[in-house]
Image 1 (cartoon, rainbow, N blue to C red):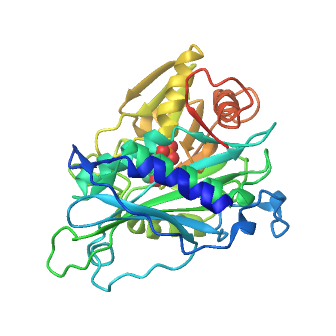
Image 2 (spheres, protein in one colour; image 1 turned 180 degrees about the vertical axis):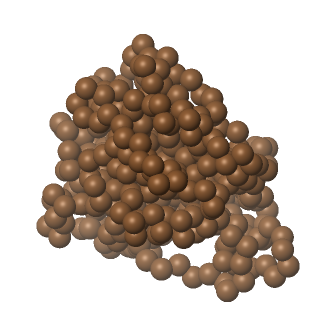
Length: 387
Ligand code: PMP
């Protein structure tokens, strides 16, 4: 019964004409035919009963396989169609797939929270992730799902895995949309076929420190991005290259690495998976995004919340000298939320920062998470409710 209801809703949203973006242009797709998910007959998994397998009090940021993933293919004609929920599991790819050989791939990350009171779940600004994927897709020569297709797929993934959404206050369901060149290609060229896939896993805090302040190391040799490169989009190709520096920093006890601009080696860019903010004399500054820094959705939201709360926020070049003089430093991202930084180490010097209850980062953390968890009214229209 539940499965039929779900498919009907997929049907009505998708069969009445699909819109999708390719290279910034919008196309109207022809009617598509949905096949039944491979997961027929597994309705009992979809119950929202407490998941006895999980230790909700000790969630970190690790992969827990869930029940379903959403898969949608885009063929040579550039149309995404045939979106459906499949049982979560391995996918089959040609050894010659564009993503495996040439890194033609993007990912996104967003979270669903369980309502504190009443049934249902809350998504934070999913249309921003959809738009960022479209920008990245253009850079990587891929077609992208429309904002509606993206949001619908995310909602279906949450509903199909609702027993994996942690109880309110214990964590969230981290949702990972992927867009990959799944078609086979030998010479360097865009793949002939693309797959959009959404899976999810329950998570708690990102850093092993939990909610405690983190310690960062400034990296001088490895650069995350270069002007004209792909640092400003969320391509999979930006992440493996930072592993070496990240592992080095972790082996010395640091939580993560801060990257410098590759031209002057003087201006701060961001950490491996989060944006950077500093506070000096009550003024908040963050490196401006010029193509080498990922335009974080948390970053954008924090800038807006801070301004609404009377803070002056400046998007500008932030140098190592600014860091030396800062009162507070914090990082932002979907996974890390708002993480206070207690120290930054550069060329053997450790600079320390204020942390704790009375800090700007703590106030902004509270302001942001109370919206994300539905504890205050969503005056900015950032929340998408799913039931
Ligand atoms: N920078 C990088 C390199 C990231 O991978 C992320 C995580 N998406 C961020 C910043 C933060 O972005 P967001 O706030 O959208 O999660």
